[in-house]
Structures are given as structure tokens and as C-alpha cells.
Image 1 (cartoon, one colour):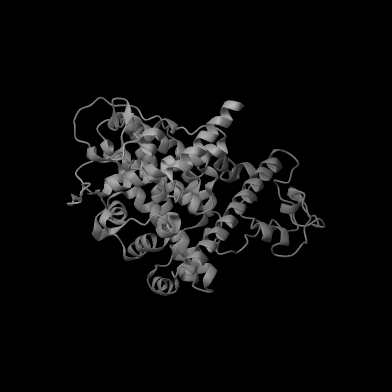
Image 2 (cartoon, one colour):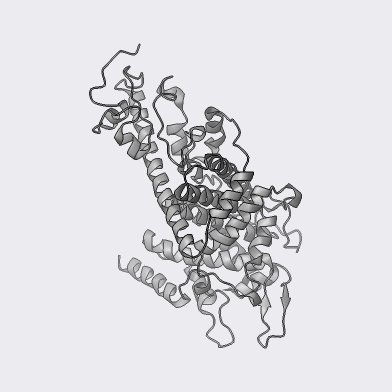
Length: 461
């Protein structure tokens, strides 16, 4: 039975964490700063037993502090993104006013229901720590006060962005090979590659799509400015319409940017903020689930005769990686990078290798017909959406692999592809199709030198 104890040492959260507490009510200064649950009451919680339940609560609080820190970094990151958009001449003012008139109110889903719906989107470690209230006692969940913030409306107290956005690509990423049954490389019917009915796309979703194309995409990739003769960014719109995984990920990022930018620039608009946050939760869940389904299907059926599907799945995974990096939650990048590299290698092994040499043009040509060819002396090509998307995301895979190798202190995993894809054969008429400066702003030779330096350092160890 709980005993009455005067909390002379502050709230139970600070006492458990062995931190100094100012004993402010209803939320102490330490908990308010960290944006964590403040267990401040006279009666001693049952989980404060000096045993297993107390240790379990301590681990749960550690996870909550970590997620809160990620959330605060995300907030600062998106606020900087919003300021950068304003500096570049972009403005959320009119869009915010318009959306506030149209965004529906969030449904009255209970906190418990939301917790259950997001379990599958959390890492196993976080799920075990934060979603097992029975092990902590009946008073361990609905006690304490949650700090109000632009990210924590009362409806969403238990479902912060960092926990929800943790990747759970549980399937392995070694994509097996299935025996060839057809020569058609067109997509069949995986979950994330189904074409949504345009009549079912809600008006607020259209707003988020345009927010992504007009604001988010140019800010995330400021140096990616394809000319009109190259087809511009048309491929992105076409791909969003027919690739459900990319579609929901793009809408998630747009909802996150819009909600945070609105909070940073305008007071009030609570109705709009709640609706945007609910949209973020929904779109993120749909995105992760569709990508999971496609990864599992590729592990089961293989990539043979499914070139376009494989390219689109690689794009979905890279988009999810970009989403997390854009939200300042990049500590879980490695599973996404592993999946993207595995798909990249499988695609080139089965569709893009000629006499043992990888060839980007061969892969693109096998994806289907180009949009059109003009009368340019060099036979200038405008790629179809799937081709342009693979060139874009494939270039990102190569660049990110090199950058990741510097932090992992190991040679790039795709280094065997650098000579042909990034350097070429050396002939004047054989320039590589992959020009990283068009995507990440760094020329091929610079990143190649970084990759060589990583290999040199590895050889010296």
C-alpha cells in the first residue's frame, strides 16, 4: 500500500534520476526543460520499490529523456528550416491561413488507443521499455504531468515524433533471386507501388503534396535544379501519384514541416496544429507499413523480373532516410542505408552489368522507354519518371554511402561501382550519367578522393 511521504527532495522523476528539483508545481523546472513526465505528488508511487519495478521505470525515463532530446533537436532543425525558407523568399503565411480553414479536427481517439496503434512503429528496445505498463504497476502510466509544447498537445502526449519515427524494417535486406518467368520488368502489385485513385486524394493531401514539391524538396536538395530540357522535377510528382510509399513519406515530411513552421511563426492556430500533427502520425504509419510490406515481399519473392519495383522500393527507403535526416532524427539511419545498398547492388547485378562492368544507362534503358529524344547532336535524353527517380535516388545512395563510410571508419560498400558509375571509361564521349554535383553539390572526384582516403586509413590500421 502506498505511504504518505512529503516530497522534500522534489518530484519522484527527479528523485529517481537523482537530479536536483526546484519542487515547482505542477511541473518542476527540470522536467519542464527536458519535456518529460513529472511525477509530483505526496504519495510514494508503487514502482518506487527499490527493486525491479523501480529499475524498469528508471530505464523508461532514460528512454523518455532520449526521445525528448531528439524531439527538441527536431524542433530546432525544422525551425531553422522554416527560417531558411523565409530567407529564400518562401512563406508559410498564406498556406497556413488557408489550411487552418480546411484541416479537419483530430478524431477523439484515446491516448491508450494511440499507444497501441504506434507500437509497431517503435524500435524493439523502446517498445519493451515504454509499452509495458503492467510491469511497472497500475500507477506507472496515468500519473504525472506532461509538459505542453508545440509537439505535445494533450491528445498526443504518449506518441512523440521520435518514438513514432524510429525505423522498424524488421525484414532482412538480403534480397533473394527468383527464377525468371517473364522478361517484363514492369511493376506487378506490391503494396507501396499501387496507384492511388486520384479521386480519393483529399484536398488537404494535395496541399501537402505541393508543400513538399514547392518548399520541402527545394530546401532539402537546394542544388538539385534540373533544367526544363531534362524534364525538371516532373518525375517526382508522377512518382508520388503512383508510389504509395513515397507518397506517404513525402506527406509525413510536409506535415511535420508545416506543423513546426506554423508553431514557430504564429501563435494560436491550435486547431490547425492538431490536425497537422494527426496527419503526420497517420501518414508516417502508412509510409512505414507499406515499406515494410514491400521489403518483406522482396525478401520472399526476389528481385528477378521486377526492376521497376526494385527501383521504386529503393527510392521509398531513401525517401524515408531523407525524412528522418530532415526531421533531425538521423540516429536510426543505418537500417535504411543497408536496405538501399542491398537493393542497389541487386539491381545492378541482375540488370546493369555488361561483361562484368556496371552500367547505369543499361539499367535505365531496361526500365522502359524514355520520355522522348530530341534532335540534339548528342542525342539528348529526357528520362521517364521511373528512370529519373532511379538516377536521382541511385546517386544519393552512392553519395550517402561515401559519407557514411567516414563515420563508420570503413571503406564505402559501393566502392566497386565508383570507377564506372562516377568516373567512366575515360573516353570524351563516355561521361558518367551520375554527376553528384547535380544532386548533392559535390563533384564526383571530390567524393571519390574521400572514399579513397577512407580506404587508405583502413589499410593503415
